[in-house]
Amino acid sequence: MKKVLIIQNKRIGDVLIASVIANNFKRKYPDSEIHLMAYDFTEGVVMHNPNIDKFISVKEKELKKLPVLLETILQIRAQNYDIIFDPYSKTQSRLICKFSGANMTIGNKSRKKLGNWGYYTHPAEILKESSHIAGKAIEDRVRLLQAAGDFEPVDYAPKIWLSEAEKQEDWLGRYKDKKVIVLGVLGSTPQKSMPYEYVAEIADYIAEKFDAYLLFNYSPHQKEEALKIFEMCRHKENIILDIYAPTIRDFIKLMYQCDALVANEGGTVHIAKALGKPTFTIFSPYVSKSHWASFEDGKMHTSVHLLDFKPDLFDSYTYEKRKEIEKNPRELYLQLSPEIILPQLDKFLKENL
Image (cartoon, rainbow, N blue to C red; front, side):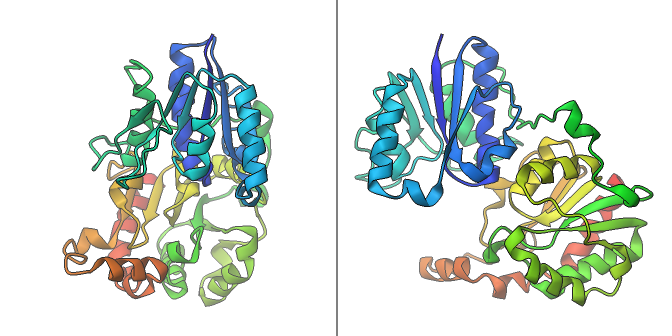
C-alpha cells in the first residue's frame, strides 16, 4: 500500500482542483492511503471525497512561523509517506518535502535559476500554455501526478460529493417558484472585483430580461460592500438577500439547489462546475484566462476577459506597469463594460435557464 500526501496550502479553488490528483491516484491504487494538507477554511470543498482518507488542517498565519513550520515538518516526517505531491510549491511546502523522508517528492521547478535546491526527487516543469479544455491550472497538477507513473486515462474534472442528507436540506424556501441565479457580486479580493456600478447594471439587466431570482453571494466580511451594490440596483424585488451561506460547505449545498452561477473568477466558479452547474465567469484583467478557465465550451461554461476584445492591450506594457495593474486593476476593469459583457451573458442565460 502506498501512503500519499498532497500539499495545497492555498485557496478554495486551488484545493478543489488539487483533489484531481487524489481522485486519479486512488482509482489506480484503491488500497492507497491519501492525505491532503490545506488551510483549515478549505476543508468543506473536499468533505466526503472518498479518495481523501485524511484532511490535515493548517492555519495560514501560524504556518508562517518558523517554530510551527519545524513542528509540522517533524509531524510529516513521522508519517513515513511514500509519495508527496506539492502543487503549492512554495518555500514552506518545499522545506516540508525536502526533510520529509519520503521516497518520492514531486513539485514544480522554481522559475528562479537558483531555486531548485533538491527540494524534490522529481521536479516537474511548469507548462507554458494550456493544451487541454481543463485549463492550465488543472493540467499542471495532472503533470505532477504523471511524474509518479502512468494514470491514463486521466479524469481531469474536479468533483464534489454531497451526502443524501445534505441534498435534502431546504435552502431556497419560498424562492422555489422561479429559477435562481447565484450572482457573485464581489471577487475573493478587491483586485478580482468588478466596479460596483457594473455589477448593479448586470443585476438589473438579468432582472428585466429573465424570470429568475438573483441570489447575492459574498464572503462574510464583504456584507457591507455587497449592500452598497444592492442599493445601486433598481430591481431589488428580484434580489435574494435573506439567504446566506456562512461556510464553504453551506455554499456548496446552496449552489447545488440553484440553477446557474454568474461571478467574478474564483473558488465559487470551480465549485459550481464541480456540481455540474452552468457558469458565466468574469475575469479580472490581470488574471490569466488560459490558466483558470476550465471546461469552457461556449455554452454551459463560458467567460469574458478584457483581452478577448482587446488582445493587444498588454503588448506595450512594461513589467512595472503590469504589476501596478495587478495591485489596482480598476482602470482596466472600467474598459470591461456592461456593453461588452451583457451580449455574452444574454446568450449564456438563454441557453441555460
